[in-house]
Length: 347
Image (cartoon, rainbow, N blue to C red; front, top):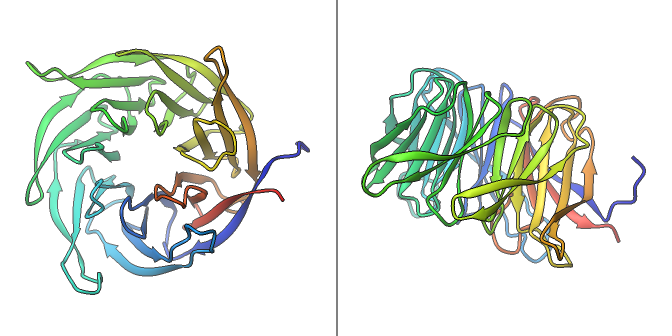
């Protein structure tokens, strides 16, 4: 692996504190906040200084939410407004958290609503781009779609029973109300709302030979990336309004790929953005994804960092969504830590 890579991954800060493995990390889309969740049943919240002008941000722990979940908090998601956080737990429930109003932005985080309905472990939760819909999925093989009403009120719009096994991940299209889910049954399914009826599955994507752990839409939404236990990342291209096909298979991971994230990146040439993947081999890998003239895709490995969490598995990875900070990346691992990285050109 002695290829000369164009970028390096610099450690910015380690955010320790969880008493058990850290499962998921989520950047707030509107404020300088980042949160992590853990098997210790808590959510940890950090604020950070501005880093848009290449200055190095510093992160400060501002709150720990003892969620009241009785089991692992597996996944967290911010609403697009940045005012509400959803937690998905192995206790089968989803918590909806809002901060008390205060002058210094230091109000307590309170559980505004608890969504019940899944029969067993809730694995993932996600807000639509409009913030009007919330999706959740579970080991009970179902995907639930909830409508978000004022005052933390939620109405279940549909229970989708399309997968034959544990559903690992849900992810909304960045612009349209299209939902994708990934499962232990090796498939990805996509859903839309039929205005005259209910939500339904309009497409099943097959190709992975083992569990699909994670999904990430491209910033523009015409591509979807999936990460699998089969050690690959696949990229699916939209070829018609309701049709996608696999256009690229990225290999090179040594073990299961648990999480994938697709950001705008800071590429010097025309690009579909930067794709980062992490997993059981403990390596952070970043590819620049671009389109060839014949519309095929090409990936260029621009950076890799082994042992990013020491000997531990890496469970999630997420690009910072805030303008000017597209080169910041966060990871969480079995060591209980969240780590912040910056991807920089090799001078």
